[in-house]
Length: 247
Image 1: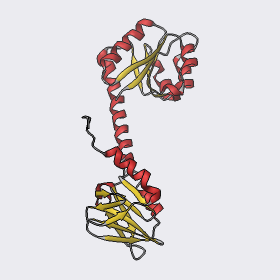
Image 2 (image 1 turned 180 degrees about the vertical axis):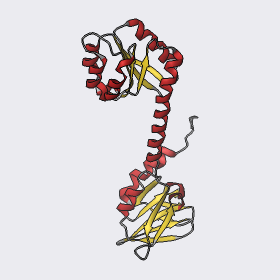
Image 3 (image 1 turned 120 degrees about the vertical axis):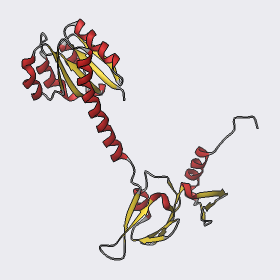
Image 4 (image 1 turned 30 degrees about the horizontal axis):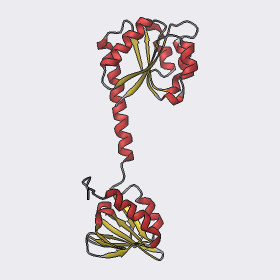
């Protein structure tokens, strides 16, 4: 985790205190600092992808609450750093994540920011879990409420049969009413490769390649189609172990 931090405070000393604290916290990096809220307003953009925005409230020209209304959406988390406790309710209205009262000791800073870091870590885990490819597929059986669960890492290859496909696994064969294109789309995040008009093969199931013939781990042989050779052999070359020694 490496979260980008921006600090806005009209007092340089206050900025230095916060940047020192940020440097002490693992996972935080100072991206930019501003002593002028007007400059911050004009220079901060969505492209900066700011994670933590530290902002004073009592500043000349534009106070922190007004500034937050204009740039809140440009940062993932907003932390107000102020000497005034009476702004807390207004800070909530602009979606502040933390409200730290000056003087800000490192312990006070660490406790407040640790809550955000834990929240960010949990969010990252959720996103990662959602992004994980599924490990199994359900296909329809022979009546409305019949389904078969097929572990993706058990699939050896898939064969098209007119309006149906056959899914050949290590232990059995399933037939279902799908097109090869539909199953190929379902498996696009997994290690499969189309080798001809009628077959998709699990890369892990390939035992040997001899010319245009693929031998699978179950000893079945499949021919590589003319229009699929370039893609298939590019995959083989990308996985080929090579020696750096002079041949």
